[in-house]
Image 1 (spheres, rainbow over the protein chains, first blue to last red):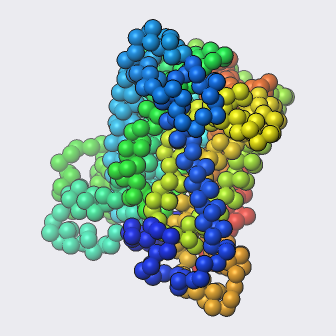
Image 2: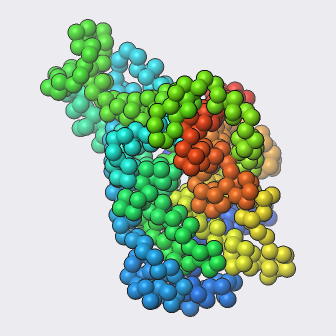
Image 3: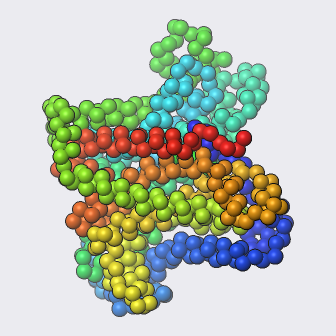
Length: 321
Length: 307
């Protein structure tokens, strides 16, 4: 089952971003502009519009004054521009200000939830990537009896619907007294995911044997080979995996909803769900809600700006998720 | 060879029978943390879950053995069958639309451009949390002030209660999640497309084959293994729809969006019936395994036509 292993990565020709890439060697000689191509481009542009519009709409709504959103529902620009929604969500607005702009006056402490989400996602990513890489190395490069059977056993975990193991895990976390703690959210994801091991193993399998052989001749043990040679060679897949892990951990809703509803250990996703269910059915604080979603999306956008290129080019590894 | 790590006296139960065991001692050291996580948070809970499904375990205390009682109850439970039906409807719409669109997008990108920017834009929705996606669309599809309904109104079509209409709510949620996952799926397929030698297309073009023809005769057969794997992954994921429902409809209106995952959640954490919830979980596990197995069999994913 080794499909989708890094199919030769697209050459980085950022110059070819434009419509008629002049040098782009692969296919197509400079064809006369066929109607089919125009149609195809039109379809692609349409798809991008549909992809991007909701993001714009979040921003437009978050920068509007909630009380007048209803009367100007069709306005494409922010209605009665204000930073009020962001202030409200971040607890910078006084209750009076919040009320005036149609927000709820209840206490929501997004700074706290933001902090919790950052701690949870960062810790999970660090543990997952490191421990999974260790295991992947043992599965890919070491010879030991039972290796393939154990690897297969790990992989079967991919087929388990998370909710099935999370019911007993909930009881375990409760019995450990870790309900409503960040540790309770982190622990089940901290040591491995089958996907992470699979992903790193695919990469390690592709490294040439000679790399290790020469190091062994120099008397280096496996621990040293792993840390001094293999890991430094693997920065690209490590970054890709870390980004994917971070995104997944950041967006996780179900598990933190089970084990950490209490205020002090609430993460952003859970907070947003609660925020939404607390707003009154008539006249919800859409502006505040959208400001909250933007804040929740922000770190991921940052990651994307930093590592997006790598992610896009290396997604081929991932095959499974 | 094991000099470097003999310093760490890890539990190495096979220490005595060394030699012929290869790198076993180092390997144990390397897999120890992952194995701990696997055993504690996957293997043991999976076995425990199976045990629960034969007991009347509840959230407060231990349960006693009730045989196949939970399973009998499941078969007789109309809400279970409803949940199953609703979930299958969701999966069919979600996967059907998403796969066709993803292949189309991947082929468009493959034949038109190598721009990383465009691929990046298509990936963007995948990066934001399910909850965020659900909330944004919930707002955009709002009956009275959502922009989509305002737009429908403006072009003279009557407004649609996307989340209030029992017939429309599952398709609505299915399409929202198509929006989130289609770019990601397209990129996986795109990666598969890149393994197809370009000479095939050049030869096709020389023979005067149309794009349509080349798609049918070159692209589709050659990405079949990739497509099979992507389908297995996305179908398994699709069955686990929960977040969007939990944030928007809470299973309603009536039972229209009470998907299987949500039903399990309710049994476990609203009815505190761990035993029954676990039986439902076992059912889901078995169903997913069967579906994945059949898909891989039907699509012969392990053989490539790319000789």
